[in-house]
Length: 126
Image (cartoon, rainbow, N blue to C red; front, side):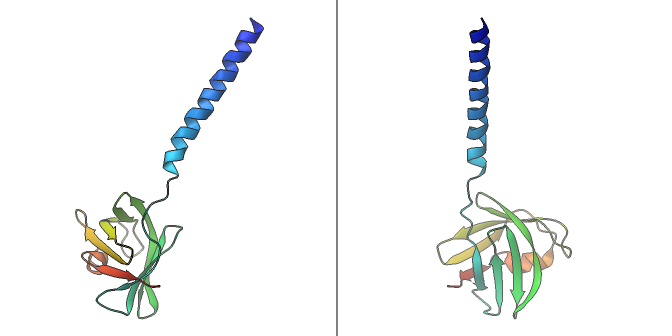
C-alpha cells in the first residue's frame, strides 16, 4: 500500500512535468521576423532598425525620430505604441531575404507611423 502511494505521486509528478514542458516548448519558438538595419527603398536617409530584444528605432537622416517595442504574431508585426503614438498598429510583413515590406492590417490611428510603414519596403543593410 505504501509503495502504491509513492508510485502514484511519482507518476503524477512526471506527467505534470511532461505537460508543462510540452506547453512551454511551443511558446519559446523564435519568430521568422528579421532583425537588423533596413534602409527605405525610396529614401536612402530613412531606415528602420529591428533588434532581437523586440525593440525598434526609426532613423531619419542619422537621427532617431521614433523608437519603441514590437511583437510578432505569425506574419503580423505589432508596434506597441510610443509616447507620440500611444496606441498599437498592426502590419502584415513579408521578407524575401533582402526586402522587408509592410501592409497595414485594419486601421492605424497614428498617421505618422502609417505614412512611414504602410506600403513601404525596406532593404536589409549588409
